[in-house]
Image (cartoon, rainbow, N blue to C red; front, side):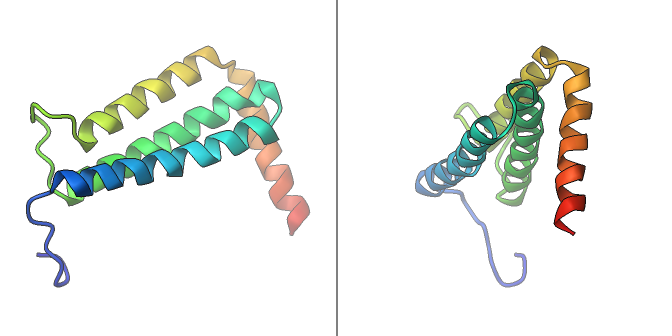
Length: 113
């Protein structure tokens, strides 16, 4: 029991809604990244996005007390898939592009202030 809210047993309807929510939360920024950034920076930005999505998914799995060794697909599996995809994106990207991405982000932040 956390602050008067009990997670209890996690129903398939809730897990499906969380999966849809995570898909939208990762899909929409991914489309924005692909459209807004230079092609050289896309893989680096997608890897950061996927690692963040994996952290959120793992946090949700921990909060709802999903059993990691379950036979069914659960949020831990989604987090693992996002980590693997993020690793693949970072491996295929060039290290120089990561530095360019962060320079690009910090330049935008400084010009907006």
